[in-house]
Length: 278
Image (cartoon, rainbow, N blue to C red; front, top):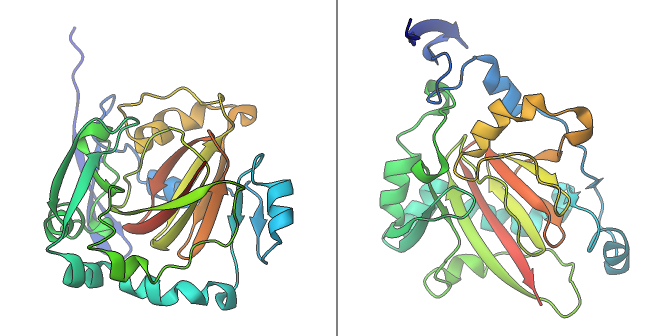
């Protein structure tokens, strides 16, 4: 007897509003449980967290080449980027840079596809129409999700990037380069690696998963991080769980060269990374 897939549309009363939840047994189109929202938006933080600045010497000795670290400083320390953060609110970005062209790429491990479009069109097509409270996590493949990150025109965006105060720590004989991006809630980039980087969240929350070099978990590079989180993450024994943490606005994560990592955006996010290259 052929298997039959049943689609049940269940209207749930949730947070004083009605939401349609989609339950599709053994398919890849929708998250299968209302509890998944809570699982996505709440998690451990087992990465070292610094709440006060450290010296350059201590950074080099403890973290630069061996361990990720999160900078979760006080308002006094983060205030230098509050003006930049305000300029990075989505409505402000659309008003000032909406007619500028940006490059969007598919959110799979190798970002196979990319094309150019106006920032306003990207926001109006992929960000603004979607209300997180009205949309359950949707299991799309990475090549079905468009993501604006990097390939920035630093001449056209100079007035914005000049406002940014990057992390003060350095790697010897390395230069820095910025990559700026905007992405929708419940999207993310699956596991990949590159050189050392500081990554700062400016708007929204972003969940990070990290493994030491050559220690990546089982994952499909064409599936989204959400696929991996819902399908593979729960199966991992404690000894195979990743380092992970949720970053809030004006928090920074650093990790060294070739650390495997994936991201899952909890909210609509605006973010900037400072890549360090020899």
